[in-house]
Image: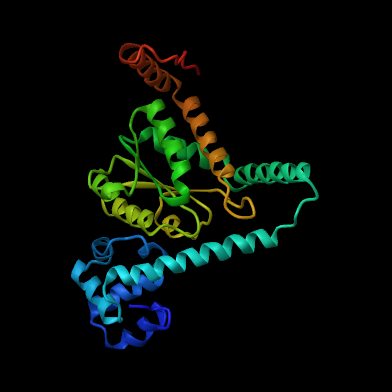
Length: 295
């Protein structure tokens, strides 16, 4: 069905909403609130999050005049593409064009410097030490950072895994995020990294953690962000970046500070973990020129 001449999905939902069953209405409300996430979810995943069956999600799409969930999702994906294009163009147009390449480099350098300075204005020394202590006290550490937040999440998980040996980076691949979250226990720690627009999956992972009595450390850009309102500890970083996107310079500076404090607080534990890693590499991968881990 060609939907180009039809009403948009939001107009369809508005028109149909008064007549929808409770289950379908909840799905419709979720689509309105998280349409850019639904654009890349399966019908089964939408149903799981909302608390209804996959069939209810598919029937809603049909009730809205689509041939099925896939056609409705295609419209949402096109909306995401148009929105991203508009945002990038708007950011590009709103940024003054430097006079030459040297000015571009200077602008980038100054932006990164400001991002790092901002991190240490927003987060006190006590906050950073407290966050590091939470990490050291955890039996297992589960790090959730999706979409644009996946890079800092993987960076943090990689370093903590080497330093402490108990860190895991969760992803959406094959539904592993929620599968692995089933195993969290009260003595563990979930670190949620998310920035505007906030990932609904990260928020759901935090909700699951809190329901299981697990402490949550949030790294985000606003104390009123959805994950921040549920977290036991919140650290802030700003992500203003190039004219067409975001920058995690501040986020990585924040993570580096936490890692340094962890070494300071428990150097012996970190040293032992790194020595174990080095011994394993020498035993099972002797060809690698890893050198010596140093603290």
